[in-house]
Structures are given as C-alpha cells and as structure tokens.
Image 1 (cartoon, rainbow, N blue to C red):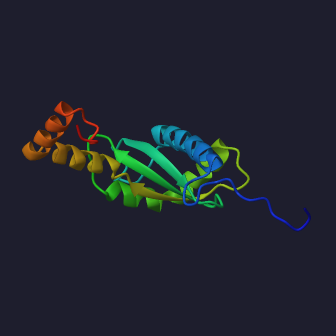
Image 2: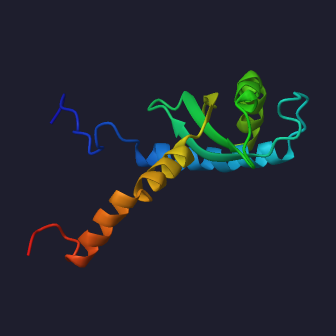
Image 3: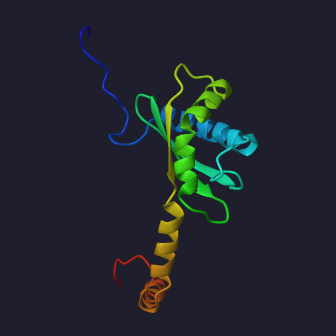
Length: 144
C-alpha cells in the first residue's frame, strides 16, 4: 500500500469535527476576552457583544468571528472590532493553546434576521391557511 493515500471520510464542503471543536473553543475564549476587555474605541465603549460563532478556514490560519450587539446596534462595532483584530488575536493566543493563532475577521451575524424573515413568511394568512390544511390532512403530503 505504499504510495497510496488514505481516502478522506470528511464530507465535501462541510467543516471537520476539529474545525467545529476549535471554533467553539475560540468562541468561548473570545466571549471571555470581550467581557473583560477595556477598549478605548468609542464605537465599542458601551457596546455589549455576543459571539455567536467562529468559523475556521480548513488550514486553521484564518477565523471569521460572528457577533451580535445586544439590544441592537450599528455596524460601527464590527468595523471597530476589525480595527482591533490584532489586539484580540494577541489576547486569544495567550488564552488558547494552539500551534498558530488564526487571523481574525469580525462579521455581523445575520442568522437572526433570516429567522425573522422566515417567521414573517409563515405568519402570512395564505401560508398559515396552507399549513393548517396540511395538518388536517395528516401533514405528510403523500395523499389520502
């Protein structure tokens, strides 16, 4: 079996278990750092942020950090976080044991906006009527 490579069992396109596990560890560490950091940037001074997800690149050299300002907020905080990304990377390197600390890019988490949009669609009268009639018919859509 020399010269042959072992086939990968990972799904194409999806993150590996290690990416998910390390991403979750980074999320917790960044949440702790943000909670106790004294930031001089006025865009971050009175802003409470929640880190919702950290997505790592397959080589673990870059990470996208998705955040949501509590109580709503502007995108000014995202720009300020990206300006301070080097500071957060340095703090993260001291907090988490990794061979190389990834470069950080902060982005607004839009998943809650998608949930609101789907809920608005489901609340429309004709959609609600279709959903209710489907439930009365047994809801499986396979006919009588």
